[in-house]
Length: 592
Image (cartoon, rainbow, N blue to C red):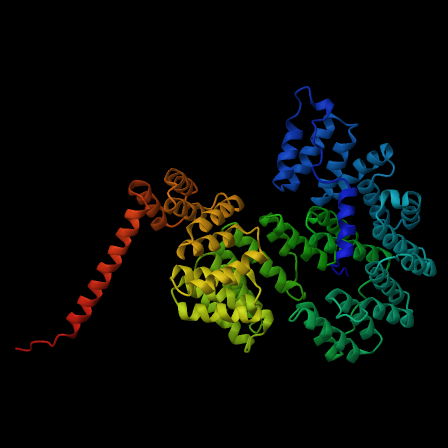
């Protein structure tokens, strides 16, 4: 259980920096400089592209050509762990620490392997001998506490957990793991005190609620467990783990296993908690992968880290591996729904739309009253630009929910987008306004509604205010910055539009629409050579819409002024034809 507090994030950044960073080898190793650089360069390329398997393979080949290179050992160990090839990493780690005894990733792997094999004395000695030199404070204390627990030194374990002090978050960590240890040691009085201390005055996280709630159920206090689960659901409504736990406790007919029963499981829980924190911190996603694989190496039956592993693989755009990871959940698991939704999302990213859709439809038959499934179907269809099917799915989700709440803002936003793309503007506008009512400072909603008004030449002053607010909220978003430039252009503030759109192009240089807009703004202030350059750039980025491509080509041929005049005349002609058609239909028929 790792709350994402600022102080801890600072600690995480320090940890990420102190542990050898992935693919940090910047200079070609000397032994490879004679021309045998292929494996090393291939490893670097694979690392940059998040191809963890290939990086592990090629760093190992590079190491074979330079077997004493510590930096290559480090990379080979890191990538093998990240790829789940932990047994293959262990011999390299042993060589690594023989050369650099306090190497962090080498010692961490060997401590984990000692714990996995039940060699708690060896693990405890390794942790004691290398201490803060090879381990960050949190990892060292948690693993030391759990190895002491497995050595039947329960008082020592509690003292070690208690020594994790100095910051509020450390105290939460210490109390949570001390509570798990007390519960596993059948000391209910101490366990309850520690679990309560870890929660404090806050709503419990789902993981903490699961541990405390299971303890309460095992103590015959199912009603109290229900209250804990429901408190966590206030923080994460609809969490399937909490829903299943609450229903189990309310029935009172099944006795759950403790979340942690021994030191090996406690160590796995510690590594999973650290992985969760790393995954939330910018720059820590790959280190999260290492800790997740180590947690699963200790306890392969743990489902929470396996689900998070799928999330991390998605974050790295490793879609096929993510889909495979999400498959490893039984239908009876509380994580099953989330895993299937993640699998469908991963499949859709590799253009397996129909397979993803079929998986979600099967899931919907199993959980017909769970709104998250039709929402997932709607999102899938919306990304596939099948907006009519998306709207139907979103309608079904809202029907299941009944009266929507603030947490459903994104559902209204998504349905608004689908309706706008279908040309159902009144319905779209209503949904976008509802999303804003729930989240007045949501930049994407402000931008989408504002930009839609710009395109309709409506409410331009209000649209400008909304988009200016969105830019303040997300100053480095090129699309939102472009929207501001576009409303400035539509309002005739051309000089400001040029300046704003130039910024948008800097932020998102390869978007065809942004480059096209910038070209228009440059044209109207007389910078026509530059305008044509931007239009050519826009075409080079291959815009999807044929109409946009043809319009840009026409502007390059005759200029923006002529195109605008042609468009105005086409609107006049269309209006006159509409009047003629209406007038003709109103004439009385001559029946002879």
